Length: 263
Image (cartoon, rainbow, N blue to C red):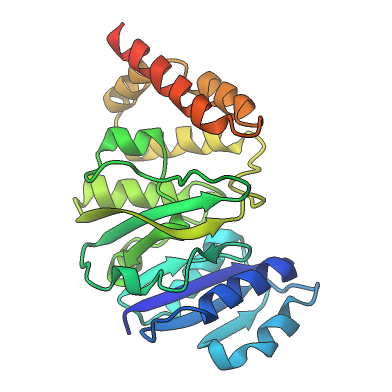
């Protein structure tokens, strides 16, 4: 079994339908499908039961949050690679799994297309460095991770939105895992989830993770590299609310960051 597709859901019946249909439409036969539901009461379980012929394992019970549910999915998986396609997210095309059959790196990452946009998002370079990860996480909807890696380093459940970022730093920086970047659009990303609507939690968790993983000297260097990172991020997000403005907001942010690096 090459792939384990893991879907986390809680009271998102319509989003779950979209996700299931995109998985069922995959042309690859080398995958299993796991659904971890958090005890939904909106009819999600009925949707799951309607598609049990396509689901390898499912459970509906209360959990302790998104990352706890994702770890539960890992525990039930058997594939060589794991991909988390949570409810509302969907594969971009029917050959999305087959397109990565020839790759063997520890982490393989493609691109995502956010809802309402037509410009793919994701890592842009063939290699990846600590500075790249400081600038942002890899999209888990487009990231294939070797199961053995996730068994060794499960998601840290004390974080609500950035445990996947912490995992990437651990694997790619500290463990020097192999990495392959791809321009293939793997998933359509539903931006209505907790990671998008974090209500200010993102900078707080980022600071906690940095303090947990790095000595003060490294953190100081990071702060020098991005002396006003949070303010710039807020401004970029504000600009990006205008339809079609996200790409310009991103360019603006990059220009400001280059300027601060030269000072």
